Length: 127
Image 1 (cartoon, rainbow, N blue to C red):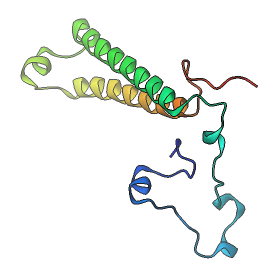
Image 2 (cartoon, helix red, strand yellow; image 1 turned 135 degrees about the horizontal axis):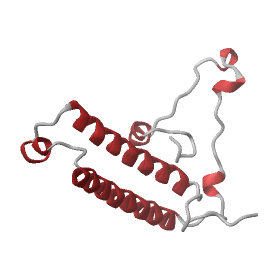
Image 3 (cartoon, helix red, strand yellow; image 1 turned 90 degrees about the horizontal axis):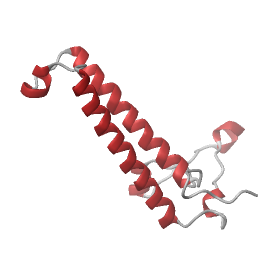
């Protein structure tokens, strides 16, 4: 929703739909979202460049996640039974859940900022 002009989610894009207010007289001003025009700005880098930069950031986040997982294992923060026999304690599961949540958050932030031209490598020029 952060990357489209009409704040559409993936399922809206797949079905080519938008939310419409049935009775506009009952709606308040906060219930209307104007179509964003910043994504059509000629000062933004091309879509291809922004997409490639986003993919590069996600690859970096994935490498950092893998390195963190190896570091967690090497530090002994996860039991040996979890690593070899897939018998993990709750503590083991929490460690991996937190690491995965951080990876996912990093990917989402990279997607949102990258598409808006705010990531290093695909920034919009300063005015």
